[in-house]
Length: 285
Image (cartoon, rainbow, N blue to C red; front, side, top):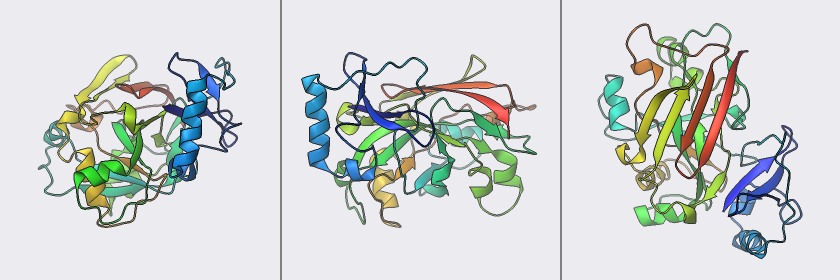
């Protein structure tokens, strides 16, 4: 299933994109798309049955904002330097273990919402990423099979980053990762049954129409199953938590000088096979 949330910010309602591409209203079937729904097999079965029956009301997508596909996110866990080609372009050694950092849940916005360039920023960068959405409480998972069984689905994430804040201003990476609007998510939460192999997905990103990133999750140093298993050794993952699994080569940081960092007025578009497409216009904060 392709689950999404539509409407004005803060007042989104649950919806579903059916097999024929028609947008369907889920608000009469479930309260919202969140961790509680993802952990409730009976509720998900009701959604699937309603979708199969073709009885859900159609929605007119014209002028309808698409919000983040997940409400009440608990935490956004991020994996850094997780593609062989990205590590190489930044001059970093491939990590021996996953590099883990966090984004605050309030950085998450809709897939086509405005991204704000922070005040004083000179190095705002782009990163297309596969987001993993957790569907069952995960702690101390032992195998890759067990890890994938805890995944509810997948989405497109844009891990916007401010490199000066991240690298040159001291401390951890968090200052460059947690600026407002720095995690567009969606358009859809695609349930795991529609993604048979998360290591066989193409990722692409354009800036002002120019292709900048064109990679594949096959290049991940730590595949999705290992990321989920590994992270569960250090923290409990709850339904509705999100893991951003890293970005392939092609970010501004890895380009020759002068590096083409983002500015107000730029347009970024990104997509992942089967998971949909995002488009953001950048404005000054």
